[in-house]
Image 1 (cartoon, rainbow, N blue to C red):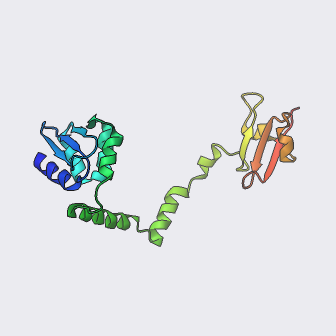
Image 2: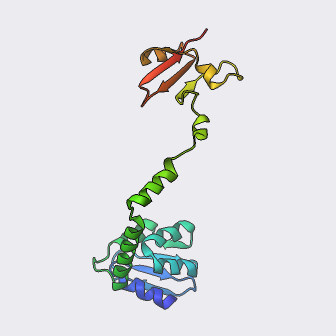
Image 3: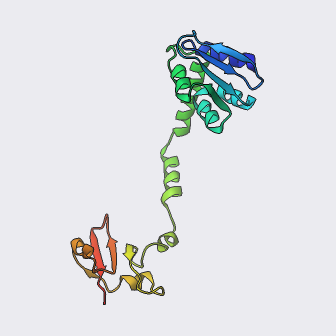
Length: 191
């Protein structure tokens, strides 16, 4: 595994100075030796394998999991070296990019039937769900309950239609909106 990792990293990292320590303890250098040296270590063989298979995604993941650590320098220094490489990608990286590109487009292909099933799965919700937080008229409510035994409908009635500006006067005990974005606003006045 160490020789494979060394081969791929040395093919990719051509600028800068990075020293890698593998999970087995082997060390190797990559780059042309310019700039501040950065030393990194793989703590597990699994982290090495993941970075080899999918470097764009796995490097961030193994760093966050703590199985790839920066011993000399910072993660910003390591990323500066990794991102400042010649535009020429190795053949294996180009092949991997194209395979990922094709797989993503195949997965995201959304014909009419699949789209209809997705919409039905996400938006065809049972009325029982809405009854948990809407009143009997299926309106959003911001009712204020004067006693704990009041229902939502009791707290909202009797409603009187008034302008939205007067709802904020502080003399209101319950408000309910109906329609899009509060088109109609009804407030209940204290007794």
